[in-house]
Length: 285
Figure 1: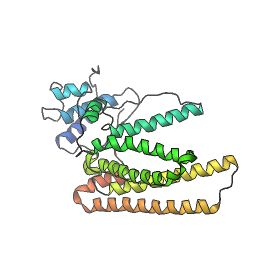
Figure 2 (figure 1 turned 90 degrees about the vertical axis):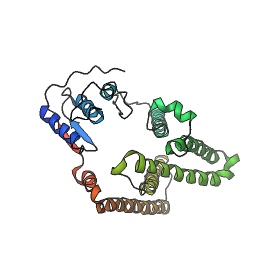
Figure 3 (figure 1 turned 45 degrees about the vertical axis):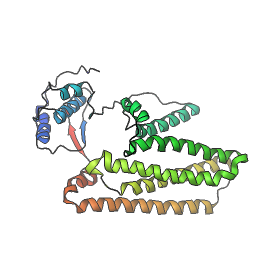
Figure 4 (figure 1 turned 180 degrees about the vertical axis):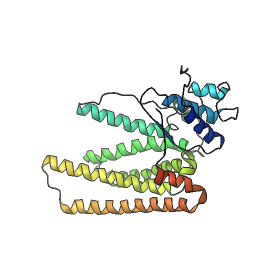
């Protein structure tokens, strides 16, 4: 794949700042380029990728080494390039349901297939290194679809309704294992020092249960209101109380996570970035 991008013209003060951050090994973990269309935001982002991956080891990319050429071709293994596609939203309710299901399946596939690297699909399907969480994801996510489908079947078909409790328990335990794996990915494999913590696994579990319970409560209230059926305060009270406990547990885990990082001197910059600065914004005019 070839990207016919023009040379960068202007922006020399910005390029000097970026080059200084690269050579000093203090380049921020996240950088946001903002400005009107056509000023070179994407081109400078590729320039930064070249500078970080250049084999010449200088403050600016050489543009000639294999890494620089691969970056411009969007084929470097350490470069992930995402481009949003604008499209109109579907107005038909059935189409909206189909899109929601497709987005859910796509999101699960992104995690299951090594963060969306489609070129690794064959490897993921034919070689299983069970020391890697990505190999387990192939079974965890596909198995979750099957187990949830079986659970819904027991709820909708009275002939197998006697298995609903057992199927629900299996689905819940499977979901705990799956969410633990997802939290471990973000805690140890992806974000590295920014989020490296064993607390992310239980935090993901608590947050996912809290989100799911909140959505369930909203859907339950809307369904009862739309059908005219009464919804007792005892039901909403119990679910709301349980949701409150999960929210408190989530706040506790998040607080312990940040307090632990603040205790470590090497994490002070990361915590300031997350809690105070909110990122680095470089304006292009």
